[in-house]
Length: 118
Image (cartoon, rainbow, N blue to C red; front, side, top):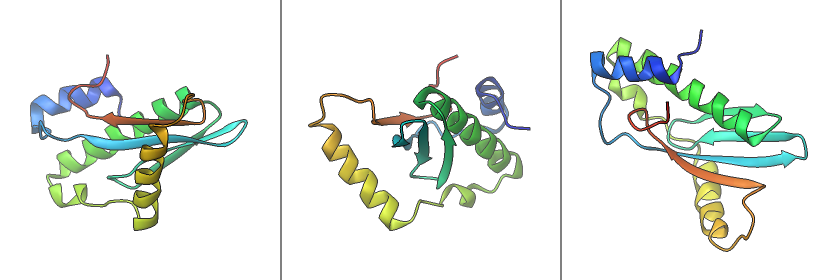
């Protein structure tokens, strides 16, 4: 069962999420009814019908993964970046986003278990 954001906050108090943990994420439109959300730093990807649903699903997947990592106590599992091609694409899209007027097809955001909204 995936962890909720509230569970990840409770877990933070028990196992101590690193305060500096910030994960780079993006949501890209794949087709008019399909969005992919990806965490570049942990190589976790989800797909959904809307960008909002994709973000929620990715946040849930990240919280669940982090919960497992910290319960196991193996911080080496935090070192699993996406393939180089994905990281280069993220950097290109990040640059491109600065010139885009609309953020409908691309959204970039940083996610942290310690400052996520309730």
